[in-house]
Image (cartoon, rainbow, N blue to C red; front, side):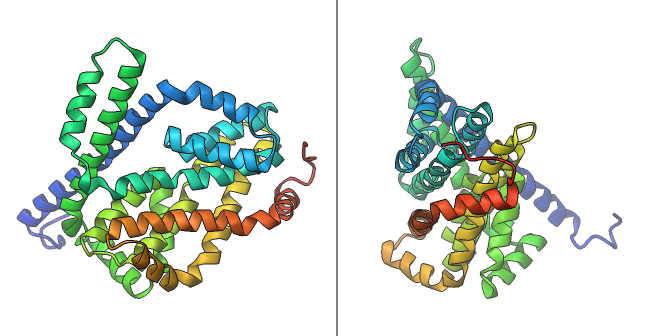
Length: 328
């Protein structure tokens, strides 16, 4: 691109390049933190969670509770979905019994948003130092706790980084136009959240970035809620990828996950303004408002679906698995 066709001068281009580089660094730091955090959590509870998932999904209520707790402990609804799809593929869990785990995972994943909402009150430097020291202890529990602390510290540092760059990032042409459009049309945030979450394969990162923009006054609460709703759909892409090479019944699990999230979002899109009003009643802190609404949305979605579980199963079977008999 020559100078005449470039919309920025040399200084602006350098600033833009630095801005993109710093944003990429903080995004990678967020993912690194999540990876280290999960490593610590896996060491403490992964095998137990595998056994629990395989054995405690015989009824919907137990499956719901199991999916919720497992997701909170492992901090990854995507991992729980992958495990569930794998177990269904191997015949350890039936499609019917996987529904509760799917619903529970959606509720459990909101714990991450609640943690992120309180990043301003977390002494990330102290957490990182304590975590680093614990990593040197030749003890599984100490090492796991160290990994958890280092992971959390890295996540909070990245969130602070997002907030420091949010105003400048929002000035980037594509983002500024999208933000301006979402201000007058908050519903477009659903598409933004869907695309971003599907690309970076993390609804947690999407929510973290959205919180930073919201806290800096770049996004309204309505647009932010819409992005979070869209992120719920975007994260389903991981489930679809996990079904590659599996049997037909395992594919039903992924499609149930997709349809449940799409239906939940469609139900709540018309009430974005009402959700914004409720958010302001729940807290005076913008980050907490978004986190609390995410919890409320996922819990209400499950409660709304509860009376129609059997109809939902039949719908998935009719659309995606006519030749499969549901195991009891």
